[in-house]
Length: 351
Length: 226
Image (cartoon, rainbow over all chains, first blue to last red; front, side, top):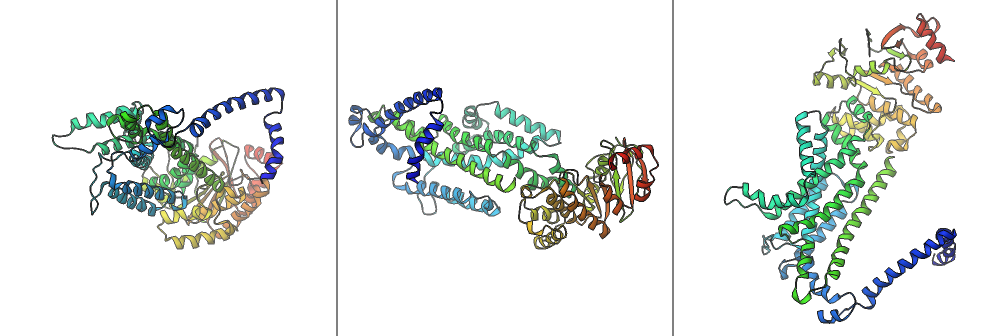
């Protein structure tokens, strides 16, 4: 294989990069630019980088400061979670990855999967919170990656069905339901997530009676779900609108009820059509969970910012942001790849 | 769109409806299972009056099957699932029984070997035969055909018509909008000619083709026979 690659490479170059004089000039120009950038990154990350030492060693060098990362990675990933208990969020995340991995195959999307997720969340919250033999860790101590993953996963799992319901209501013949759905969607879409989060954390408690304390994390989670569901609704509405009238007619003719027609015929087709924009929304919301830092929740981005405030390690923001950026990227890239896989799987079978 | 329609179809009768496009033939049969609403007049199916009562609409739809020009199979379900969905959900039939029945009808339309494929993997003629089998699974008393062969490639028309002829012999009540005059001659008890939303002529196939009464019918027949 390598042999054939070496043999074909000059041909490939000629065909794709140097096929005309103008293209050759453009190719050389772009390759030169690329080389400049890669050279810089290579020097910064590998040649000039510091692997052992202190902040002082790093400041003298002109490269990536790994000691900073080694020192701060624990806080960036886990936030204020107590030291002796770190296996718990770790295991909770592994369970999450396992459950997600198990759920990836469409054949498994049955009722059993709902129970599986229910079981998973029970375990997840037991591990994170404690009780039944584990020391309690209240959720103001939760933070970092487990928190971000939790906000995003629960956000998607709940906003998606809510979005479907909103989309169906928006297309329903009952004027009042339709109007309510339109009002909700337009209101939520017209407001930035930051203000919804603010409202949930600052304004909402004002309406509660004295002494009633509604968990801050839960409020943020609900705010995210409500916010994203409006976007999901619009994405799914697009899918619903593209379903041929003949599908409804066939379902009516067979005597299927409205509920069955929607649940078994229309919605399953609509959500397949809108897989790309759905994942787009999901990726957007995954990154938007970082906005919870304005209501003082320590998600992955906030733990990173906090790590940067350590006076001993001031000035290593590039290292910190490259690191968390990479984490965000890996999750978003996996989502994107997965959605492409789903699309082609449905496309191959059903079209 | 429709005017002065006065039509009675007896149990087991085969009616072929023809006419130029826009003449209201599809609209007429689509009124029978309420895919179209009518403004005036009355329509009774199997002693159930068709009105805006949802109960009545649902009971009529259980008795009336329909085959569409564009098949309207459910693309996200396998052939077998397409057939069993309504019996299981509407007739509350156990899954096993529904599967057995579906396979029986798939054999009848000679397509049992495709049961686990998806509609997208079938040819037009195969899809239409699946659509026929799907409506049969609901054991309808009346079967409506809305130009079942118009969207097919010419070489697939016969396989669908053959199935329809077999069905006609089984004695089910059929109302069929089609331009397949050979089919009309072979199975129809009556042929109806429509134009501009009215029934212009109604006769046995023999009389209809060999001795058309109305000027408009003559003109229409001369055009499609050539």
